[in-house]
Length: 332
Ligand code: TRP
Image 1 (tube, rainbow, N blue to C red):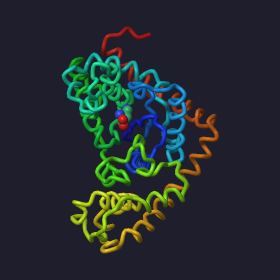
Image 2 (image 1 turned 90 degrees about the vertical axis):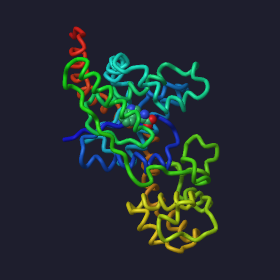
Image 3 (image 1 turned 30 degrees about the vertical axis):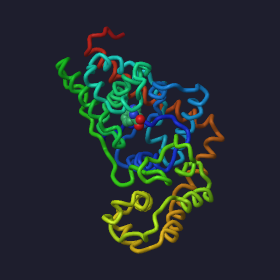
Image 4 (image 1 turned 60 degrees about the horizontal axis):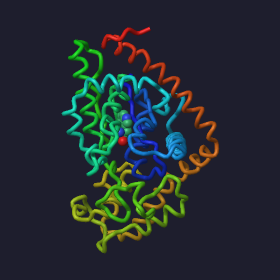
């Protein structure tokens, strides 16, 4: 069976964008793949972290994944730092990847900003660690958002460079799985900027922890324009807020934007928003409830992560040991 690996940052406040863009797809993939899902705490410390917050966010993200339907028995869910194979393989990849390749990474440029000299070395080498995450399991497919495509290409470059440097056919060239509609959920207040947990206004996003009445309120207050809804996607081109809401609706009912436009052709936003709120609440309320239950039982969440780490170690250790032997390390 093909093997999926994907990682999610331990950040608090997961929102509808995370859910529709990643989490929900992860749940669906479980039917067809062997799935390994990782809360990437090693990646998290490439920028400053408060230790208590990191612990709490790691649990919170794990709880949301479980609440959304990740099955910790058939899939593997763990936090990255607890499987040392990731860091071990990342070091080897630090010595395979070239400075020139990493210099092209747009995410580093964005995250480091103007103060590049002060960015951590870890932030710079982040894509090497990401390649190690994937290749420690010889994963065949990686579901990611658009923003991680470049890192996945680097992962393939590293696999290829390793194979050719050592004259082996060892690491696979992993395929990205980029998801379609509504993978980019935008702010409810500005259809041109991404829904984000770091936006200072909470009204711009629907958090997975929001109770139903708050979800309804945020949708009712979402920014719109004065026109009625268009009958086809072309009518959305210059209307980012309408496009965003229609996109969310389409994603929530697994429909195309085209069909959704047809359904609401000429409708007023007020009526559309009512249906959108009902739909969002129907999908999110059970997750919110289950997440709350799990957050009240941290010992259980920790035990799931512990068990996942143990199984992940079992898969990664022999692969990384073989890589070490290929490199010429004397293994014991
Ligand atoms: N870099 C990814 C992100 O920020 C998270 C991640 C880490 C990841 N390791 C990975 C994703 C391996 C896919 C595969 O979203």
